Each structure stands twice: as structure tokens, then as C-alpha cells.
Image (cartoon, rainbow, N blue to C red):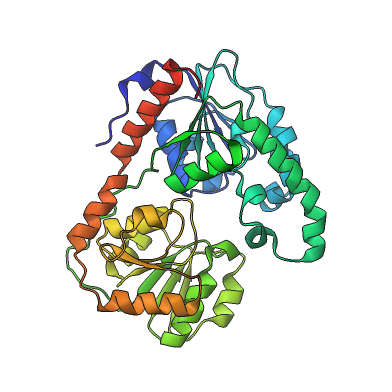
Length: 374
């Protein structure tokens, strides 16, 4: 049973989140904040209630004028150059503390009068600072056209970071980015993983398949796994949807199965029955590998980014050094030959449980309210 810090009950809080179109890792963080601060208004660019949990939907949701644009849920990313101007026009609800959960522009919400501002930062704006080719492609004409737009976004993002009183990063990987791009210090509080829900199967073993749970978009590098498993012919199950779905299916071997979207309960069953989880992308943190480990399953992960903090090499998984089919295939073969201890793997995952997140964020909020700005 999770316990929220007692100090939270006395706070008047406003929340800011980039957009609300589906329930991913960032929205799970926001969901917990909504539980901890009942009635706190949530400021966001757009809101699709059907894709958002009842816990969040019960709060006052304050949206931008983009909400009224026809078809905005499909096309909202095309308005990226306008986001800084749009978020600056918000009239924030009165509060003692503004908490922004941000990977883009949520931290740009104007501060309520007299309030402090804590930013729980998933990453500095990745569209502007990192992963350019993965998001926008390598087309030289497009790259030339977007160059001044991205330059302006970087200027805005750097300047806006000075308005935050305290940064909290989701990993040491992101902490380093905050220092590099903003010149600001940040403490680390790992995101919450529901280790009470994610538990090992009562019957040990596996059903003879490896597993990927991921959005099927370029930067996730699922293509690397598709190629590796086309060569090995070992069964691979891929859960997820996205712009790369059809291309990946066309490239896959006969032993690779695509399930599309799956419920949390169905994913939990797959975690419990798989041999290993495959994680080929570079992530800021990566909740999926921790969920799999909570189920006692080893993780084969690209050795960069958040996986270096969540997967212990040769104890709870294997890190592979290059995003190539050959490097991944070698790591899978090593993992298949390794003798794993499910209890030890789960113990590692328990470091990232929900209560540790609440306790850590509670300390950060206390420091934000009672100490001078870093």
C-alpha cells in the first residue's frame, strides 16, 4: 500500500504536462501526482479523455486553444514550432507549487504568482537536442528547413529552464543532459514501477519466445531485433503499434509475431511467460525492462542510456554494445546460455518501486519549498 508524504495534504498544487493523448510512462507519473494532490488542476496542450485514466480525467483539465483545432489528436506534433508561444499564453491556476512533468514544453507554463516551480524532467526537449534523425528523418531538404526552427526551440528551451526552481531527473543519464544543455544541477528520483502488480509466474520457466514491448517508431530501433531474429529463427513476440508497424512486419521472419496493442494484463502474462525481454533502443530510463525484471525475467538491452542504471550486466541481463543485429544476436546467445536467478532479478527491480518514487519526490518537493533555488 503506497503512502503519500504527509506534507502533500497541506499544499495547493498546480500540475503541468505536455499533452494527454495516451497512458505511457510519463502519464503514469502524472497519475500518481493526481492521486497525491486530489483536485489539482492539470494544464496541458491537448486532452483526449478516451486515452487517459479516470484518475487523471477526474481532475480539472485546462487545455490550450489547440484543443479546438479539427483533427488535432492526429496532427498535434506538426504544431511543434508554436508550442513555446502557446504554453506562454496559459493563465495558471493559483498555487503554492507548480509541478511540471516535462519532456517538451510543460515546464514553460507561467509560474502562478508566489509559487515555486519543480520540474520532474523526463528529458530536455529531445526533438531539439537529441535524436534528430530518429524523429525527423535524414532528408537533407527537410533538415535544412527545420534547422532554424530547432535552433529557436533550443534557445527557448535553454532560456526557459532558468524559470524552474528545482530540477528532478528520471535518471543519471537525464541528469547529465540537464547539466549539459541547461547548465543546471538536478537530483535523481527514478520513475515509479508497479512491482506489486508485476510479479513472477507461480510456475517457473518460459514458453519458448522472447519479447519486445515498445512503440514501433524509428528511435526505438526495433528493426535491429527484427533482423537479428530473422537470422536466428527463434520465436519473437512484438507488442506495440506505431508508424513502423507495416515496415517491420514486412522485414520480419516467419518466427516473429506482431500482436499490436495489448492490455496491461495481457502484457503481464507475456512478461511472465517469455524467456527474455529484448530492449534494443536507447531510453532516458525505460520502464518496460524494470517491469520484466520484476517478473523475474532477464533483459537483453542496448548498453547505453537508462538501461545501464536498471539492468545489471550478467546479473539481471546482458548489455550489448552496438545497435546492430550481430551485436544483439551475440548478446541473446549469451543470455540463453546463462543461468539466471529470478529472485535476484526481481530484487533489482524492487529498487524502482512506487513507494521509493513517492519518498524521493517528497524530499525534492520539501527542498524546493524550503531551500533557496539551486
